[in-house]
Length: 428
Ligand SMILES: *Cc1c(COP(=O)(O)O)cnc(C)c1O
Image (tube, rainbow, N blue to C red):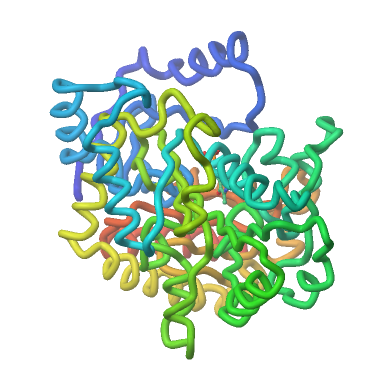
């Protein structure tokens, strides 16, 4: 895509500062933001207030499934909004039923509940687990160290990272964290109060770490033995990002006994609505009927508008064979990142991930970053911004790529060229 960007008119020069000023005065300062403000996008490119173009390999943190300003999403939004936007969950609407069916068909028999975000989808899982164990007095949910499950009070209680809890104690009761990919640790942690295990198929915020097939199969056996629900947070790693609808489907490929692996419940959000705020959870039969009328709900969940958009996204992914694209472009990116890590070991340490959920860990003590306050991941992403590309930090030492699922091979090649330039300059 060779687009000529006209020089910005001089009046725009100060536009970023004036946006920043609006935030400083009026927006609660919960985020450490980068000094960038975007005004429009097209596919995997974003344009900032000065007209500068960026290759977006962050995808709005795994949200922009089909890229920016996708014409088919726009059309679905326009068409549905001209018919019906919202009615409430006091009534039925066909798009919600059809989207639930599409999700069930991609996983296994069960049912779907719709909400508005990842944290809210996980809240549904906590309530499902509590209901499941209630009559036996069981309520405790085991989660993983370095997990991330959202910013609500139960979300930060479930999250296995101290930094999200600090200042908000006491936590919601009934969550404990055990090391990830460590079956024995999970086995040892089970108490008479334990009712469920919740893990990410690929840890995202924790640094892009996929679960091993042995771990997942072991957890399944453990949950069957101890009558626990096995719940998976697929908010980031789900929705085709791994190259299959669910990351566990990809992780289990070719593993003996793996194709029949199934958790009891799965939360989703991010890529589901492609930028339209949506969340959902799927629960396997018979647990899907545990939450009966009056036990759970949300005003905006599963509106005709949101569901029409999500259905369109699933249709396009299928029609354009984007699972194959995720695999081929993802494999290319991973191989090239591996090459860079080999070539520049003083800058890149390791590469992890599946499909278009990739992370690279930065080496310790990169000379160019020494003596600066900000973590290496933030400094590295700033360098990428200077070079015209967006990526997402994960913790202090990992940088993630979570681009649109329709990222083109040529765009991936451009991303590698930019990365190589930044990495080579840091290695020099
Ligand atoms: C982003 C994320 C969440 C929280 O989703 P929100 O939509 O921000 O509430 C939960 N779990 C995982 C794994 C995530 O990546």
